[in-house]
Image (cartoon, rainbow, N blue to C red; front, side, top):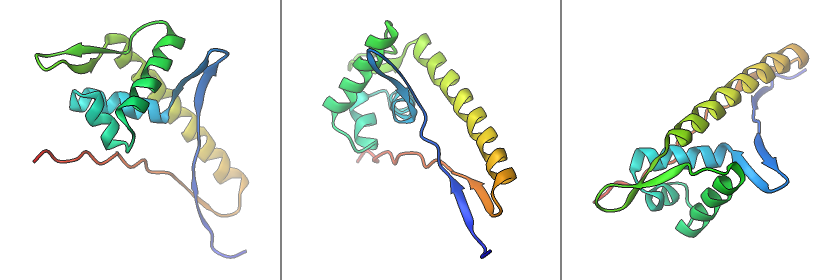
Length: 128
């Protein structure tokens, strides 16, 4: 068999009958809101509109039943609520554990080299 170098990619999310709850994109959005203090800047860094980001955030908060972001500061920016921080932590832990297991199994099963996917952080536009 030829030398194949595969990269494992997993798409994991949680949903309910009420709709999409959490996925990697929403977690990245939450992380960027915390880092940048702005939903608008977080949306721009991910290449989406503010309206799309707001809609996704509100959908997740509706399904969970609690806010994950709150207004902060004099310019009305955003930050994560304590629950928002906890949701990010739990999702990242779950995602890491499942990816590690899947990588181990892929390496056990397939006759080629399988490497983990390295997540690229969205590029944050520099403020000029």
